[in-house]
Amino acid sequence: MASILAFRKAATVTACAAVLGMVSPMASAALTINTINTTVGIATTLTAAVQASGSGINVVSGSEAYQGTNTATFQQSGTYSGFNLAPSSGSTATLTTADGIFLTSGNANIPLTNTSNSFSGGPGSGTNALLDTLTGSSVNDANALTFDFTVASGINAVTAKFIFGTDEFPTQSVTDIFGFFVDGVNYAQFPSGELISNTPGNPTNFILNPVGSGLYGIEYNGLTKEFTITAALNVSLSTHTISIAIADTSDTIYDSGVFVNSLAATTTTGCTGIGCNNNNVPEPGSLALVALGMMGLYRARRRA
Ligand SMILES: [Ca+2]
Ligand SMILES: [Ca+2]
Ligand SMILES: [Ca+2]
Image: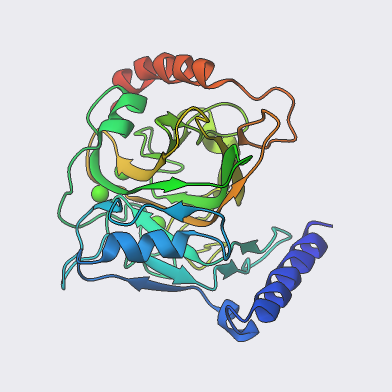
């Protein structure tokens, strides 16, 4: 059943993309990561690439900001296409998501095979105030895209899709983190309420992708499925701010990455976060409590 659903989904994505003239059907056949080797203009490039066609998001020109290290010799981020990873064996579904941007806590030039249990590398790019708030300590190698935008009257939310991968999974208890902040509130959390991070308890949210017998052709030892996220706009504001960010915590090694796409304006009747068909989505205030509660875990753990 899962494979049938996966096939139907892939076929739908390909057909829609072909109708829209965005990519040819063949373009989705193989994952291609297009790293960017300069920070000049990178914020506007990533801002455009993360949005769905006709997103309904009106970017405030000049507001685009980028945090990361991108040079001729090292690239922390880029765009990607053709994320359509077929499993090497078993009944696990093909892992598919639309074209978008790739942010990492290290090197965006990841092998498209699983070569290491501790993929790490690159010059550091510092901490990030928003992620610091979630973890309760200074994160490292942060990679973030931030911009301001307006929406039409009646719009009260934005949505996006993502897949998070990490080499912290499954052996490490150090917790890299992905945040999706809209008007200052983080909406990135697993359906169980945990932050998007390889924290103790979160392995249920990851697909194991071991070295050698790797399930999917990508470096990360753990991958989430594709999640759709819904973030409420603060409707008292005329201009909104989004920040999409990822970082290492505790140290700079065992890197993580996130593939984000299809950012668009939407409406919500109150549901936010992941899995908005769930009636028990925590309010942002309780998310802060969850984050505070996890701070003790972060602080108590050290890499084995
Ligand atoms: Ca790193
Ligand atoms: Ca790996
Ligand atoms: Ca790490």
